[in-house]
Image (cartoon, rainbow, N blue to C red; front, side, top):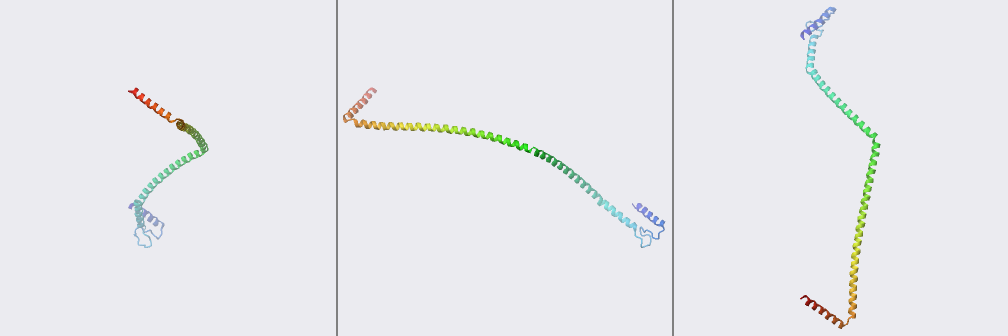
Length: 196
């Protein structure tokens, strides 16, 4: 690097001398002219600055830019993938929207059919329940009628018996009454003798 700087210095100084100017470029304060800047030291300082910048800044900057490039590339790929998925979803939704009227018509027909089936089932169930209720009511009525007829017959029998007893008692005299008692006692006695 020093050789390169020396060569650059010689080139500039040779060019300045060849032009014949009174002002000579002062690279490393070798001339006593105080008006000439120290270009050599400026080049050295700048070279050190460039080297430090390259070593600590540019390499890290390159690494950062490379990492950032990869991140941006990944983000773009993800965005493209998401866009493709969104486009596919949009296309599917648009397709469904195109068939929405048909789907609504189909759903209405299905609901109507299910409603008719449910209506028929409920009607059949209602008819069966009504038939059971009617049969149960007829059976209950028949049982109630039979019970009432039996109760009426028993009541008629009791009344007829009371009436017959009252009539018999009113027509029987004391002598008939005694004769019936004797006949009854005699029959009981005969039945006891036959049993022995």
